[in-house]
Amino acid sequence: MKAFLVSPGARVDLDKWDPGDTSAFPGINKEDGLVMLEAIRLRLRELQARLIAQRLHKVLILFQAMDAGGKDGAVRHVFQGLDPHGLSVVAFKAPTAAELEHDFLWRVHARVPGRGEITIFNRSHYEDVVAVRVRRLAPRDVWEKRFEHIVQFERLLADEGTLVLKFFLHIDAAEQKSRLEARLRDPSKQWKLQPSDLDDRAKWNDFIKAYEEALGRTSTAHAPWYVVPANKKWYRTVVVATIVREALERLKPEYPALPAGLTGVTGLTGVTGVTGVTGL
Image (cartoon, rainbow, N blue to C red; front, side, top):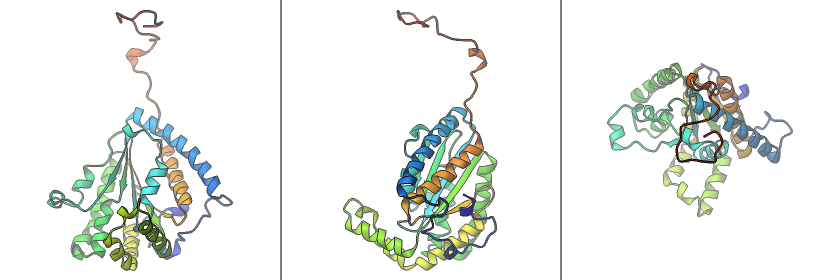
């Protein structure tokens, strides 16, 4: 999975990352990929159970992409079946009036995971150096400073025990066109399509340039970016799931030992009103 990693300090040229690439799993087709995915998800459920029980590690996973890049699908398919008690998904929209009264990270910091939790950001604070830049919602001297703010913010999270994984789901313009047109034809998905999506598509090159700079300036050892080929949805999902599983494996979460006061206890006594139950 290192092939997808953006090296810290690297200059990113997304033209050199093939959105249709499937070479990480040679000889694997969609059907094979779905079988692999189910096995990975089973392992993710076991690892999450250990995370919840141990209450030591925190996990933050964020997704960015061009419109129709597959963020919703990646979240839905990778994390299917995980325990909702230890999982939350945050979809950041345009800031509210109250949020605009604070610094741009205020609303983000409030939603980061606690111990034993996995939190997923569907869009994130990176909108404040990408969309804000391209749509000219703030001048350069405002969003330019945010790169360093983000790096230091994510350093704080890492120093406090948070595993940070960042995924850019990479599609090409032709694939985006196909997906947006499919949404236009499908009544169950038309609600996802907004006039602003068409405006943003016209600014495709500007968004790519903004993402290239964001990826290059904010991929660090403590909060790495992964550029995931996302033209083929099954491949995107398997790659993301594999990277997440490997990262959680490195945490080596374990179930806690039995508390000292319960060592040697094999049954419960002292309960009145219950009869015929062995051990109570």
